[in-house]
Length: 370
Ligand SMILES: *[C@@H]1O[C@H](CO)[C@@H](O)[C@H](O)[C@H]1NC(C)=O
Ligand SMILES: *[C@@H]1O[C@H](CO)[C@@H](O)[C@H](O)[C@H]1NC(C)=O
Ligand SMILES: *[C@@H]1O[C@H](CO)[C@@H](O)[C@H](O)[C@H]1NC(C)=O
Ligand SMILES: *[C@@H]1O[C@H](CO)[C@@H](O)[C@H](O)[C@H]1NC(C)=O
Ligand SMILES: *[C@@H]1O[C@H](CO)[C@@H](O)[C@H](O)[C@H]1NC(C)=O
Ligand SMILES: *[C@@H]1O[C@H](CO)[C@@H](O)[C@H](O)[C@H]1NC(C)=O
Image 1 (spheres, rainbow, N blue to C red):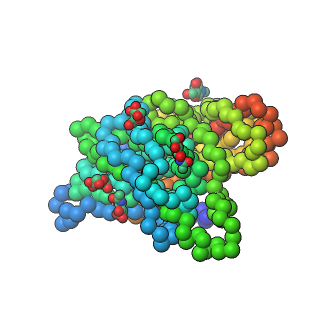
Image 2 (image 1 turned 90 degrees about the horizontal axis):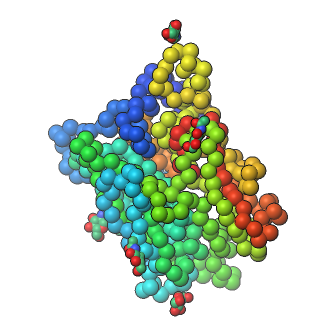
Image 3 (image 1 turned 60 degrees about the vertical axis):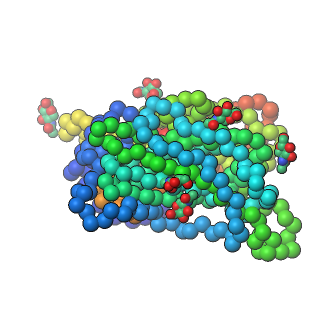
């Protein structure tokens, strides 16, 4: 990141002068903490139409073909903490006459009304995360938002000829204060590869090679169902290591690990955390420390193979919710993921035995959902 230090000059005074932004423990669980209540517009507002929230992104370029579509899940997310993700059976739509697709798009549409925090959520297919995102903060007059993500790179999974488990976890609380229930539809659009023949005329049709980033096989690295809350490995502190065993076929010639990560509670604003010595010297009691440096470390069989310096995504309630209404911060509706090349280590991995990948976070405070 070649960004100037200016954003930090802007954030740090806010965080230091108003430590309440990141500290109060309103909820014991994985809330995105705010000490102030999520902002609530007075109902005298002149608009009764729901507010449309959006993140400014480059539009997904789709062919002009008519896509096959499928609503994978429709659910109202009320009180969900400590509960299992919501599941549905996913099968590729059997009324779709095409077999090759140049683009597959996941669409998350949601409405919410009342008062609620920004909530983190994950979308998985067979344990493979497809989307990590944050909800928009509702208003009494209601909000609506739509997130589209190009999931073409997960084609081999999405096009499998069998029923798979689709899961969504939104960690939410409903009580007398927090009334916002998220009404959600998740859809998939499969754009047939007709355009491709025109665009790549003369070339042999061979799914994947044009896009160049579709894997033949996708192995999940998430916690297994059934379980409570998300399928994430929750890294709680600087010594916490979490991971999983896996096996790969003998004929693998390229392997990439895609890492999804989001940071919450004491580390939601890790880039503004003061050193612990500062906290001690100033007798601060409820301020998260460990300084402003974090690094997600990936190990293969206990040996370090990659490190990630995550982009500082500010969720829709971060610092001041009014900053993110209706345009939410970069990455907040579709958190960036990070690729780690595993190919150089295949020499060790192709022995037919099981191996392990594990995650840790330098200086971590709770919690890093990885
Ligand atoms: C998925 O399908 C199986 C078998 O038909 C059924 O037992 C299960 O209840 C279904 N799950 C959901 C979430 O609909
Ligand atoms: C989701 O929202 C978008 C944007 O408003 C809209 O174009 C699309 O038709 C919606 N999808 C469904 C399935 O309602
Ligand atoms: C979800 O789909 C249902 C049925 O098509 C529709 O009535 C509802 O408005 C949709 N909700 C959202 C948030 O798009
Ligand atoms: C999908 O699987 C079913 C049953 O195993 C089989 O009858 C069908 O031909 C398969 N379809 C494709 C496109 O491979
Ligand atoms: C770090 O987190 C792990 C997992 O929650 C816990 O078992 C361990 O005691 C923690 N270590 C410290 C030093 O707090
Ligand atoms: C911190 O507390 C100690 C003991 O109560 C006190 O002596 C010291 O002056 C305090 N330091 C600051 C910076 O307030």
